Image (tube, rainbow, N blue to C red; front, top):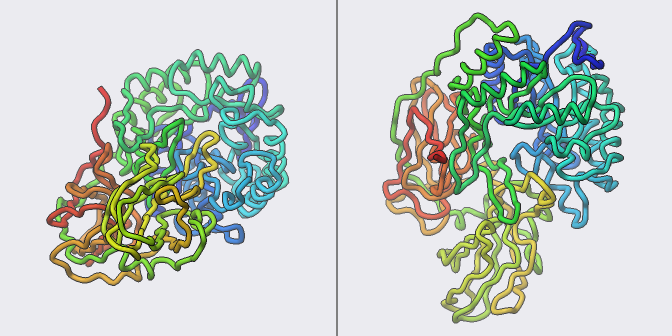
Length: 583
């Protein structure tokens, strides 16, 4: 049993001075079959601890349903960390940010129109308390006080950037304690937010990636005694659609690390290994303009998205070796990748044609939001019948987040939240034409007050100034594509469509899927949701983990929302393309 203690002089583990050398590995962003590999490489870089958030929205997808199995088997992840000789910093939220959908807060809370998230709203606190009970009761054996790897648990996350209600933090800390958490608690904030986000009697820590000496001094000024810890030592950053791939010079990052460790402080790399926003799980930011995060969470980390060591791995390992013993094993080599191959997608089915097998329609006077429909991710297909022919102006009060507008199944335009678009003019060919709005949730906002981010069409829809009423709302979460009835086609269907192909493998390995010539959509391999692609970049390929593949026949499905590649082919290549970097 290793028990972490906090005294005026710093951290102590079993009575001996201890420095946390930690790195972020989010189990929910890594295929479970690859957890052990990533944890082993963390130890090889010289780390003694790993850190992970816990995504409430995945573990509790509905109020009465809680999951901790499969890709969410957190106990199995903790067992693997312990087997590797690593301690764990656990960050259960309820809010995690993490560039994750909604900051990890479940979308079903937003079905209540006036709920106040991250506050003492009784509805939010009751839900958070229930979540802690369901999560932490089975995790008690994993606390270090009971012989497990979890040394400390975080209260909330960067709360000082959101609010200043100490009583709210006290409630969460009390809830953790009532659930049996008897290891040290800590908060984390950016240095300028320490006063607002700190909790008396709980260790305060700081998040930063530069000006390390200055930021540690700010932390010490706030907290005169005790250990110094950078819970998020930012050594890279995330990317957004339409931006550049963000990178950070390894030597400069290593110099900052040297400053942190020379001061005697502890550190948690954010991230050690970023992983992937598989499926529809990426978040978004909105500081006046909505900006969705890309599928890759490579983060320019020491271990890249495919788990291969980067220049930072070697640079950081060299710095850590000045202050701690580093394993003698060499830096792991880049893993073998699949040989390049091209796959033809010769079977197709139109999305509008197959929509009835993908989701049940709900009738309503005005459009319902995703949250009202009980839906987390994916699309909603809204349809109504137009009364007359002629030129019209369609106006959507709010688009959350991207609406593809079709008449009788034929595309007439797109309205994007990101571009602040609300109106579209077109001509209705006949009375009784069906207006279809395919609305995509591109990721709920994960930071700031924008987390109250309801999806679909939350406002009025008007045609020539008159409100359109009488709607069919069809949720399309796309959690399974098993019901799709593909057929061989020589030409792609008009509008959004699914395209399917198969390929044979004699062995499996990681690979990268390139969709040159495709526009925007999502990809599944053997039913495993790889994530979103978009020709606007910067990301131009999708990481395919080896465990998602199998020997023998494999199938790939591409949902293309616009125009399919003329040849309807995709390519597997040995290298990633995360896009151009800023000069």
